[in-house]
Amino acid sequence: MRLILAATAATLLSACGGASVPASERAAVTAPADDARVLAVMSFAEWCGSCKALDPKVEAVQQANSFDGVAFAKIDYTSRDADAFFADAETLGIGETMRETFGDTIKTGRLYLVNLETGEVISTIDKSMDEAAITAAITDAAALS
Image (cartoon, rainbow, N blue to C red; front, side, top):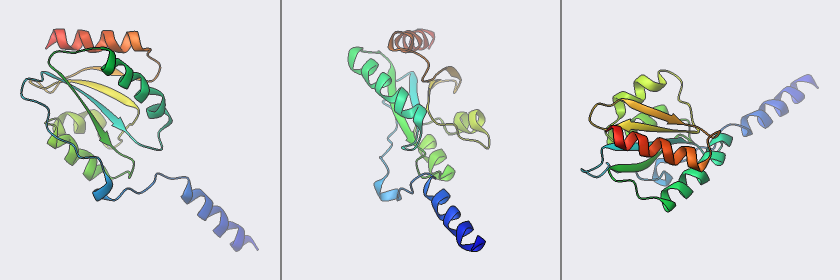
């Protein structure tokens, strides 16, 4: 009986993990435009509650504003595949920056404002910020770069 309960519990807990997304279904990541000075890159996962709170705010800010020299991108970590995550970061030109930022633990639900010339993370935006604060952070990052 204990074995059956343990097996059932293990099955249920494994279903709580992130969904596996085949490479063919992952969103394509492309390098930012040559005139971009700042990359606003979101570490995102479908299973991430913080992502679900932050993403609509970032989308609204993008639609309401024109940020000269700022490109936006998402790196999908839904499948929890660190190699794929960092390969996408390399495509964006920020592979080293993301490896230094995360180390061994990739954190989702944050928008990183990265100076594309220096690789420096200028600012980090999280779900606690409202649209006005997000807009100000992006505007400030663009002015610094």
